[in-house]
Image 1 (cartoon, rainbow, N blue to C red):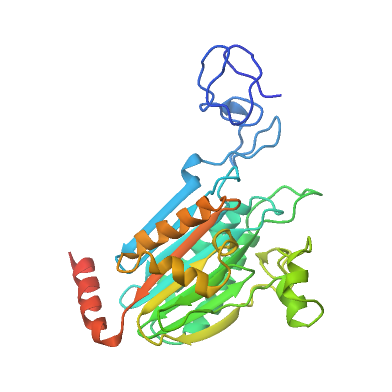
Image 2 (image 1 turned 180 degrees about the vertical axis):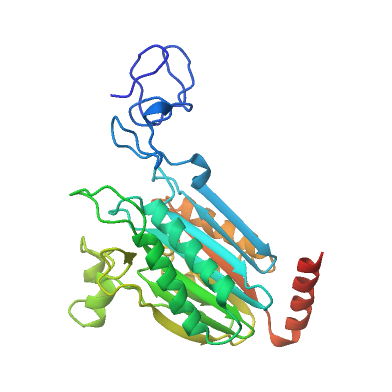
Length: 331
C-alpha cells in the first residue's frame, strides 16, 4: 500500500495530495509505493517495488517544423503514461522531410522508451545520411538503426513482459513523392478532396486472417486477437527490422497523415479521417494535428494518440512553399 511520507496515511497512485494532512504527493520519487528518491536507480526503477517512474512531461508532445509539417503525441484519458512517440525533421540541405510515429507495445518492458528510442534513431538516421536519392534505402537504414537501438535497451527479464518493443511508421517526403515504411499497425493515410486512401497495410492478426479469407472482417474484429500485431521492432521480432515499403506519388493538394491506433481505432476508414480533416481545412498542420487528437480524446481516449500531418500543395504553389521554408531557415 502506498503511504503519505509525511503522516503515514494510506493514499492511492492518482492522489495529488494527502487527504489527512494535505501534503503534496507529487514530489514522491516512486508513484506506486511512495519510496524516496534514494530508492530510484539510474534507469528509473524503484528498488522497493520495481515500479518505473515516467516523467509527466512525456504525457504530451507537440512538434512544429513549419506551417506545413507538425504533429502531436498525447497520453489520452485511460492510460497512466504515454507510450507513443513522434519525430519530425527536415533533412539538412534538401527539401526532404522525415516523419516518424511509434507506438510502444504495452505487453513489453519499457514500451515508452522503446517508442522514443526507435523514433529518434530512425529520424536521425535519415537526417544525417539522406542525400536526396534512393529513399527506399534510407528507410531500410533507418529501420535498421531503430531496431539496433531498441534491442540495446537494458531491461529486466520478466515472465510477464516481452523485451522492449514498438510499432513504427516512417515517411520520407520530397517534391511529389512520399516513401513510406512500417512495421506493426501504425498507419499512413493520404487525405484529399479528390480521394483519400490508407497507404499502409496493418501487420496484425486481423489483417492477415481477413486477407487469407479465413473469416470476415466483422468476425475478426470480435476476436480477442483482433489488435494483436504480427511484426514490430524489438529483440524478439521474428523478421528483424525489414520494413514493408511503398512509394506514393502525391496526386495534388492534400494531406499525408501518420498516426497510431489511438486515432484510427475511432476513424479507421480514410473517408472518415477526411471528414475530420476537412473541418480544419485551411488551417496549419499543428492545428489539424491537435483537432484530430481532440477528436480521439472526445471519443474516449482509450489509448495513447499520436498524429503527424504534412500538408502538400499542388505544383503551382510549391515555389512559394519552398521560399517560405528557405526564409525560415535562413533567419
